[in-house]
Length: 395
Ligand code: QZP
Image (cartoon, rainbow, N blue to C red):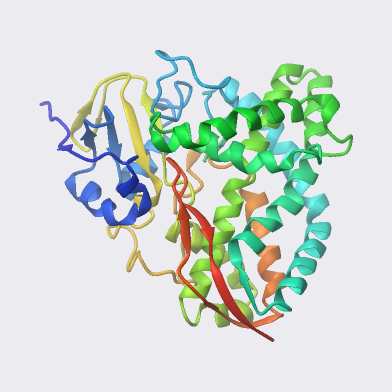
């Protein structure tokens, strides 16, 4: 028996959709486990059960043909494919092992220094009573800790956020949102290529550790450069927006700040819940390697399938009151960091940044509330927050 996916006349990369993705998710989820989006020529899944299953089935839903709309089997990618994100086993696993080792050792070593930097930032913010929790906090803390950890050159770090915006725009179609950032991205791309060279990196950072793996024969010099590029692509904009959403959740849901202040164990939980509640990485694609049936719907080989992480994380089939940010729920099983083989390599770095920042803020701030509406920056992949005015009362 052959069943076609229901077709929906929805472009998930148009400005109306991206400005408020949550307004459109119900329609996607309710249409069926798999839908056909003719406007972009791809299938889509938005229910938690099926998104998670596809993420875990890396053989049928592969990454090596790109995790954007472009099929690398048919089109030349805009940059050399990532050895992690846009690769399948066994090549992926070799690269991932190197990065896992560097990040886990590196993070443990840097946590004390990062805790001090979080305290320093929190101290300065508390004195101000009112600040922008994105431009004064969420964009500041990752930029103070992560590029130093990698050992990136100091000059030119202003290219990192525009570069990441371009990387994430490029997973979608070449629409106006992509084009708007393209000019800025060309400059940034040149700087990033330079920053990833062995000779550009500080001798004691995570970048240098990746080149040490190359020296041991675990990868080539060119592969080491490309792995450093992965850190610089995925390590900043992601955590900036995740911290922004964490602060948004806490400032807009009365009672949550008190709980997080009073119970340090809830700080990690609050971050997981913020990832579930407002997933920074809203979508990415997989490509089918063989014909497959999903919940009775037949997909052909070579199909692009858009996975709605942000919609899965608010699927009422999986979560009760999914639109409520609730630090006391167990958000475990959210797919904001992916699932399976490709699950976020930097997830412990992100969690450390969030927890250290909350540990620094909690004892200093009695309460926090919105002082104006948050504003958003449109991106084809990220739910990005650009401003979050807050008022605080010092402890
Ligand atoms: C971006 C890379 C959520 C992912 C799409 C984020 C991401 C991961 C890896 C890379 C870039 O390896 O360049």
